[in-house]
Image (cartoon, rainbow, N blue to C red; front, side):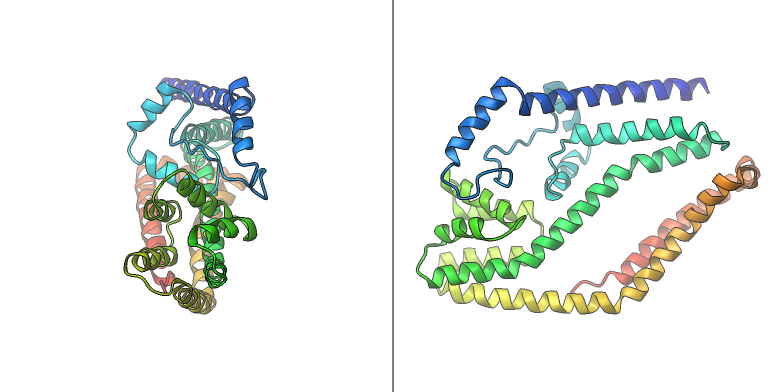
Amino acid sequence: MDLLYYGCILLLFIAIALASEALWGWWFSKLSTKAKRLNKRLLQVTSNNADTGRDTADLLKSRRLAKSDRVDLLLQRLPGVYRLHAYLMQAGLSWSVSQFLAMGMIIALVSFLCLELLPISLVMVMVLSIIASLSPWVYVIHKRARRLLLLEQQLPEMADFISRSLRAGHAFSVSLQMLVEELPQPIASEFRIVSDEISFGLPLSEALQRLCIRVPLPDLHYMVVAILIQRETGGNLAELMTKVSQLVRQRLKLQGDVRVLSAEGRLSAWILCLLSPIVAGVFCLTNPDYLQQFIDDPAGVTLLWVVGGMLILGIWVMRLIVRIRV
């Protein structure tokens, strides 16, 4: 109990420190005098754009994990932190890694303090608190999946727009600027970054490669490869973009058909995966003594770990079955 108490105190201190750093970083980047002066200068630079405002992509893309130098250096030593940073960017969120971790710790501590009031065991309180701390990660995965799906659905329209612009006699760079002004979000913001990078002197090939890193979609990768090969070998880029648009549309149509046909299997997988945790949670809230004897028994704890491992294995196998790649 003493070890658990000191562990909670340590987590509370880390959460407060990260939350304070995130609050200070937000104030420094939004409300400080230096930030206001910088935003004013950036607004003057982008004043020639038709839709300057909230939807305008930032010209300065910070790769920092935290506003504080010490916290940034500390987070750089953690494994997988840059993958997490990439996920936050792909989800279209303005959170830093330090803010994301602070949210998880604060949610875990608040959940622990609230669950302590219920008549359940300490082990169950810790398990539920850890599960609650994963809610920011679930939100990021959900936002990332929705944004990438929306970007994938906008790719054929983007290819058709570039094709029409090239047939009208515009250059490819001018077509990108027109695309930014005409197409909806989020694809307009991604290509705004490409257009700004080209305007600041970055080669087109490198700007498109950066786009592929920010938007990990196979269809976009094929489109970028086709554009780069055409610029090296020559050819009719407008006709190429039209064919790519038709190919992407057919692929999305086939993917929708497969998704409809596999809907029953995916629903069955969700029911089987969520049935056991939901029933256990209902028993913990309605009749805690029913599961208390099972948890107090060493054989019951061992069996609980075995069942949890088999449940995770079953979720993985069912995901492989219902996830059909087109």
